[in-house]
Image 1 (cartoon, rainbow over the protein chains, first blue to last red):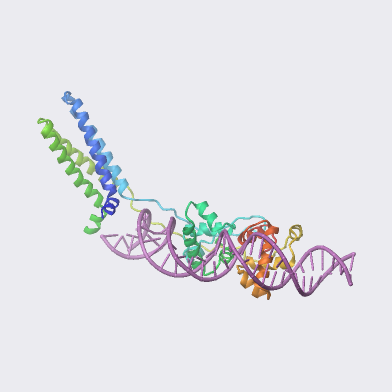
Image 2: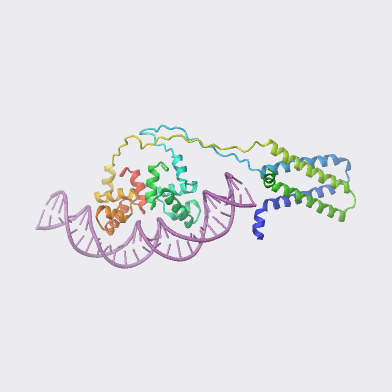
Length: 159
Length: 159
DNA sequence: ATAAGGTTCATACTTTAGGGTGATTTTGGC
DNA sequence: GCCAAAATCACCCTAAAGTATGAACCTTAT
């Protein structure tokens, strides 16, 4: 209960704490400047600017207007012979529902790496790679990694 | 509308409430410490809230609405379309000392067949395929069938 | 707030792959 | 015919791959 509540509202709590610290800082500053009353306008102006900035920062933080990458597949005429360029068949990838991570694992598989080596390369556990590879096999409708690599190459999913 | 607005700005509202509570707390502390300047604290607090709200409003007003991502997919012409013949690198084959049978096994490996399936295909026993594959791995200087397939393709030993 | 998908990890289990060793039988060339 | 290489097969063992199930966490979409 308690940890879940904290994790859910940790942002809010953090903001609250930051605000508290800020206000105490202001209070301290005020005590230092309490004698110079005639500078109160400057003080208030600073507060206004500070809190306006805080508000802007808050709004930007809480609303995620993340700009997503727009991927446009252009019509490509394959370079016959010399050019060894690889153009991934994004249509097949999305049709099969392969995720980015699964693609990564698939590529490393194609390079002949063992599950253990893939795990080390991607900084995850062996079990994770097993899960990914199993999902890849399901989605590609194959039974073995060698089949997966072969099929993926035929479909131009990997080079 | 209303419920979505609340859920979207839940954090902001919560922040406001926290601010109010904190301000009252500060007020209480101040009463304990200094009796003067009541009006000024309220004034500053109001300014803080006001300008925070202003900042939030400004940010929300000035940030553009969420960008809709559109992924356009066009036809990609694959290298497999036209007649692309494979010319085996006989020099590499003889250099590595690969026998015909070993080449057969290697090709079937590349098609994703298991040792059991290769054995059935070639009408030999599983142990025989194991022996062949082990020799292939030795000669190719690899440790796994996936590596063998990758290396063999790079060397144009198999298509 | 809820739902859904993606990533991560674990445990237990079965299957396959691969290494090592030794052996027998074909086969092609001298 | 003899010999070397190739091809065949067996047994044992370890390592790796793969299956099944459940779960936690996070991001994103609704």
